[in-house]
Image 1 (cartoon, one colour):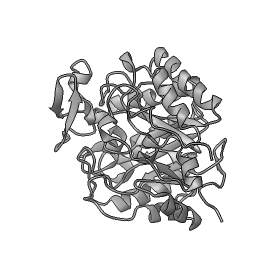
Image 2 (spheres, helix red, strand yellow):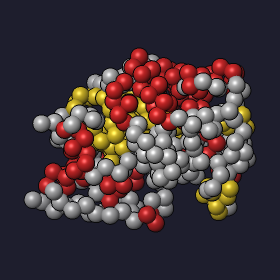
Image 3 (spheres, rainbow, N blue to C red):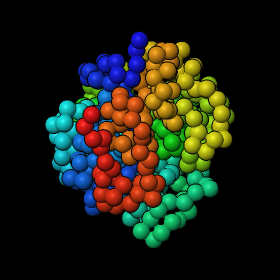
Image 4 (cartoon, helix red, strand yellow):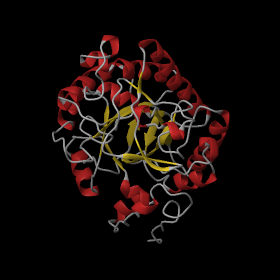
Length: 355
């Protein structure tokens, strides 16, 4: 029977297990969005995952949404990330970098006064962003012109090239959670007309162009999507149809895997996106959001998924695969330290003692 510890071929990689670490924003980068030694320690501790998917990383300067998140657009950032990839590979692990543009979730106070950009001038509502001046409401973004979009695509391409230069085994394109590519995908945030608005084929155009460009730079490319997730004030009039269309049309994109967030952080939009995606997508399917080890094992055994990406469980359990293998209890993370600076709640969670 196929289970969490059955090896999996993922593009050019052979994964020893199907327990993936989901991308988790932790805001521990150094000034100028440069990854440092602390981040290298954090990822090395978790190298027992079948695959580490490193956190959302800025592909272009001036698009910060979290203040202390890492980037991959400068040489200093490439060199900083090399600390992490060397550490992970030295521990026998495999790691890809999530490429990300914050879109309308960015804020002028984090970007030298620059107004954020989006498919349409619609602000995120119902939440606030952390800035050097405290929590602030999101601002109305500037609508991108069609002739600016090739520059966005080139930003992702350059970031993928830098990620490979930094030693990553591949990249994951962030097409989820209300950030720029997802904002183009969903009709609640994309109200534009023309080649990049209206029907789903147009709303998906930017994402598909990004995938084509990134695929030219990296041998292993994954994609993360979240058709149901309402985080960042996102919605779509028909998320199941959106997921189904994407699953069908992603088959020709050379993806190593498709990473699907199955639910809604806010619990507002309901539905089964995994079944229609599984029916249509012919590659490796990774599920994410709230899986227990038992549920993940059952989903893989039933052929519903090929792997599961665990998020919160990896925060407090750096040796999560070993804990699952032994049936050991899982430690709970401290939410107060999710985005705080320093090692507390980051690299100080204990490992299991020897068996």
